[in-house]
Length: 120
Image (tube, rainbow, N blue to C red; front, side, top):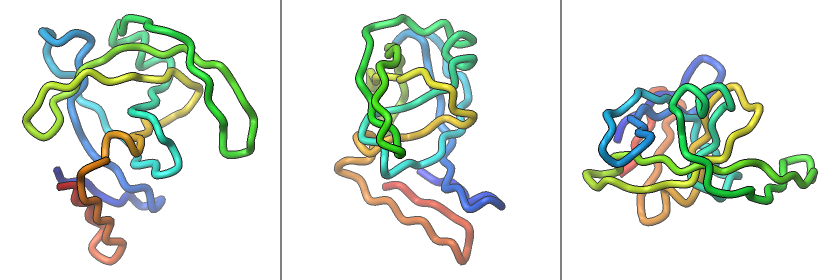
């Protein structure tokens, strides 16, 4: 999987996301967030646009130490050739955040010189 480093220094990957296993992909650009230990965080408006099914409330601890309960939803992505069910946390973020659990077992290289990202 390839990505870029944008002008603000954010490591971004492009992928497709689905509301159900049988639906078609909607394009999504996500910021790689190595401090987030879940699957994916999406802006609330994106969760609504995709029509994701709510699954539960999940407890999160923000970078400033604040603890919150946020709604979690089920989504599907094609991940390295395999359709994978993931948990999506809805938040007030502006950019989707790709979490560490999606990268476990893979190798992430962010090259700030060439402004390229590789996840293999």
